[in-house]
Length: 273
Image 1 (cartoon, rainbow, N blue to C red):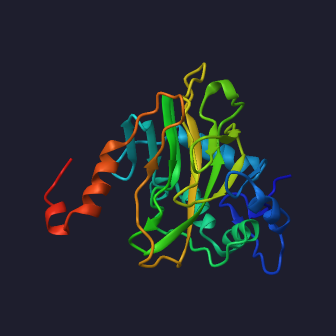
Image 2: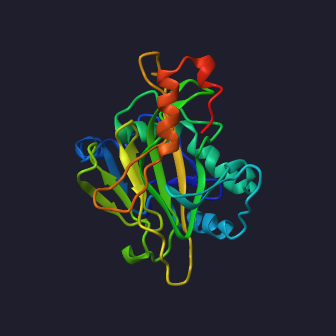
């Protein structure tokens, strides 16, 4: 039995939520969690559906729609756009943008008026290969094409029989980067939902070290609200450094932000780092 029941396991379509209260039993725990609101739900979707997603991962190809990163802060990471997937999996991602799924997310988080992203900007299927990692960071906060404020992340893991020793655990850190509060192993069909703010520090900084060289895979979904206004400062991904680690600072982003804050736009546009 999965947490989310579907009327069509081929596409991932949920029944209309109507007045259903599924998710509200988690709201208090979600908002009381440290270091920021979050919840971990195992057996989130029917396993056969995610088995199908995992099988498709063997056919993923890096094309013009994929985004690949290989630098000190995000090593051997690729994000695959949902619109490049097989039709059944495209339908699954479209169901994640449907009213029933959004209602479930609102029930869990207590955040009303959530808006999905039809562009899947930064979302999709994420893969990190052997030796890769994603440093602790706070995500970009502004969906510029839609002028929306980013509010929650939903991660659904696709990793069979994954052990902590294989690396890739999701770490949640406090705002000051002094304490790691959570260390979540990315197990198959485990879903992690959390608030996204400029201070929600998270990542999987320990390199992937699977004995058979299998990559770490996940579904990543982001949701927004129409609360963006001129009082907020838009920023890209903000990487952090764990105390006592060999993590590298992202000086390029820091310098670009400093340039844009201190220089007139006509001059800032001419400077490249």
